[in-house]
Image 1 (cartoon, rainbow over the protein chains, first blue to last red):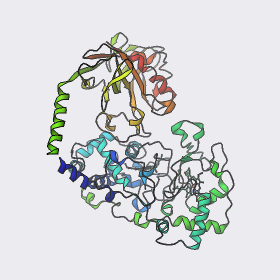
Image 2 (image 1 turned 180 degrees about the vertical axis):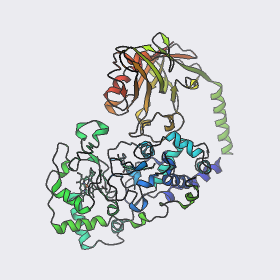
Image 3 (image 1 turned 60 degrees about the vertical axis):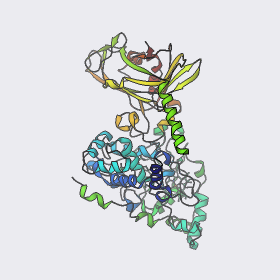
Image 4 (image 1 turned 30 degrees about the vertical axis):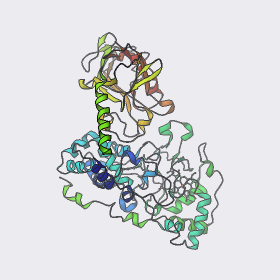
Length: 335
Length: 228
């Protein structure tokens, strides 16, 4: 028993598997209910990349969240699912998920563990049912053993499936951008980046709060409503008029790679986003107070601001070999 | 040595506990007014429309307590029970209380409390494979009732009530307090007809997400449960 506790503590040495970057706030995710282990993370990574989670075994989580694009769906304004079906929203980049309060653009999901249920069940995404996914996994040659290694139980449950996917996603921490090394005093901004940072702090940081570059609150940033999609955002969940057209403030980390931008992927370029903030804001009842006064930026200032935003790119995150497709999965695919 | 004493202590506590607990059976019997309740075949009378039949009924009973003079004297730990009319084994379970406990009310809740609703993935009866968790918006379905109703001149129509919601004004988690003598086993009768009082099914046939409609249905939960 005592030995057991010792081994357990050794196996789940938290600081090795998940480091809270210097000067970051405490994560929101309650790790005590789902303590990270190497085995569970590895299992979660398998599942994240395995199309077995979809109805016709063609679409995996990674189909819409690719590691080389900070886990977003590159080039697609709206995400593409099974049978070429097109969703209604742009797939967000996945990183630093332990710090989010709610998930999805409208906050429909209240806990990271429950997130995977949404794409698995969505007819336009993976079109599956979790009990059937569990059934399929149980009947593979390899998953029962992997679940046994991770949870000491080869009977696969929905709980264990979801918790292991969470574990992998929790490890996707991006905190090694140039911005971070400047903050740690290990390198310096160029003059242009410095100017951009000043503008950023004045105009953007109230919502895109450092160090995570999001307040994780819901705000209306003045985008005109797309009359085809008619997406009312947060109000869909709360049914409260005051939440109309509010969306979760997205992080700006790795923004260089996560185009197209906004909940419906309407902008392809950062310059278009900045032009929106400068002269595209649509006034409405729910427009954020922080955007009520007009923003005036010279063309030099815009260039500086973009230069700063590019300091949020974290190549180590993009090319981390713990995050990409696990080669060990290859022999089992399409079997 | 200290370890040994510690273990001995826990062992004694364990034995002590085992000796002084009482096992109570809680049984849930489903009725529809004066009729027994059965899935599929049987049709029942219902207000405003001609008849109704059911294909599915499941719901959560949670946070069971015994109360004496408005004070909680015992609480079940990890108290979540999914009752599914298709599965007879779910319709009765045991609770274990200390001996000679005095109580005058059995308290239970229909549905899942808000804290549990935001606590991530859980196992057992709360496992999302049980079909009682919404996928596109987080939250447990507290009660799921499905079937068909008939109105003369129309084909059979489907109805689906997925009643849930845990936030603020859309909370559908409901307390049931039943007066009881301190007896061993408790037979709880659940009258499904009560859910349809003042309901016109031809108007209100689908409730699939949290909201006002779900709250109205949940307000009828308390009247469904009686101790026999």
